[in-house]
Length: 119
Image (cartoon, rainbow, N blue to C red; front, side, top):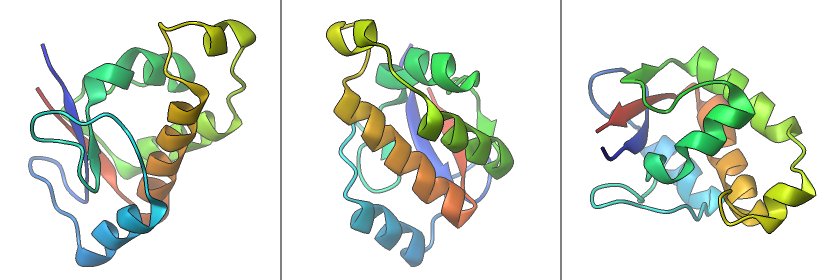
């Protein structure tokens, strides 16, 4: 099963303002994309789902994660300290990808965005 993850103001469909899109563009986030994801405000959630759950305790395999939850996820990502084993293992996203995930969640947190899971 695949998973694409989209930032949105509402569950059920993807709703972003021009200002939201601009905030993602200015953050210059580089994360893995999927067939329909990977542009401003989305990424290939399946690639990062296990790591995000380990770090935040939340699953990206949800139809809707509300803004309050995404804000908590951002705070968990921002303070998480990776172990040397994680940095050396190909089973985990790289340190760079961790920082990019932090940037994505920061934009969502600052703009009051939740996450829509599409799979």
